[in-house]
Length: 183
Image (cartoon, rainbow, N blue to C red; front, side, top):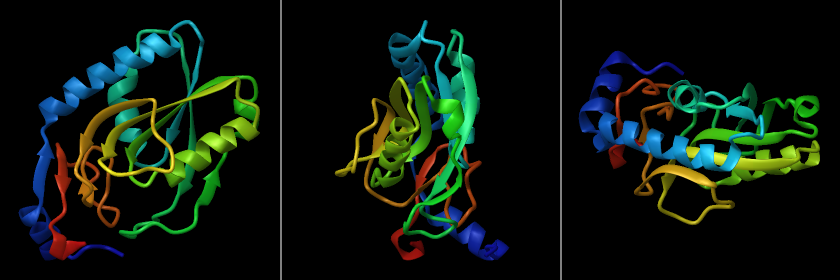
């Protein structure tokens, strides 16, 4: 469902910026250092969780100065909605994971259900080890925790840097909280 241009502008005008682009850059540098400490020399397979983590991967991977390979996994609970449902697998690279040190890279740790299920799937598919990194983690309880977190923010509906609101705003510079009346 496409947002009407007037609705798009109104949502943006009411949103509150929680994290600036400069804070994101600093967080990505910290994440790169932590990931390097964990995985340098292990020739990891980085799994980008589609679609939001494509933004994170594009900004984070050039900061990793060691040998790695990239693939993706596509599992989602939202499909353009503002609340999660059952996990839908669109692509699961089972054969590529066997025997690999895997880094699952995602945009956000919201409830942690999707990340938890992807980690389980990697273990089921025979990964040698599974590590996780997320750009944003909400301050709340999660079904699982990420090994590396860029920034922690309030438990609100967010967009920007890969996070979306009804399939829009992934390209916003900063992390924004959607106004309560728009959720």
